Length: 206
Image (tube, rainbow, N blue to C red; front, side):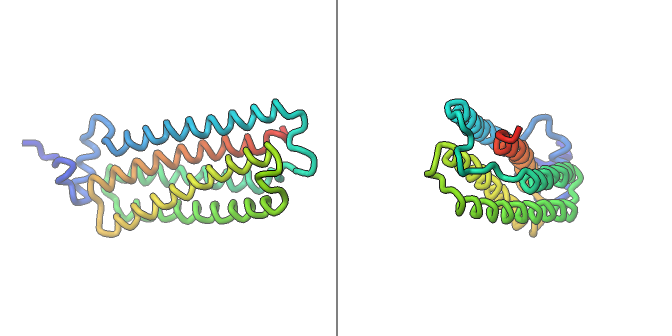
């Protein structure tokens, strides 16, 4: 008999670490998130393509009276968000050693940064809405749709982080370890999207 427990039997940090180290393929939960990411990549690809299509079709972009946001604040915020991939990657790696306390701290730090990012971005979003509404032009419509979709994905990521942190309060299991790894993968994707959205947002300045 193998000394490595089955996933459903790995209900301690040590057993979970043994299961993760013995895997030869990614678990189903990881592949589930990967498939979700594929669909979300198609969604953002469509939105970004729509943005540039509308830009080509409109000789003046953005229209008169609408200014492109200053690049400094969103660029700094996006850079900070992208850096959260580091603690997420470290947390996913820590699953292999069963270091549940370290995993909690890394996820908590990433969640705190993500929440701060979302609050600041939503504040800027509402300020822009006060200047020009989404119905004012094709530019405003696609601009707000793209940003709102991105912010919604960040919010979903935060909810996933909070959810796994609550689960980890009672210890690390194989399923929770898979959750940590899957959420880390989702965050790496979200950060790639954040860069793509920023470049699209600032493209009229380029």
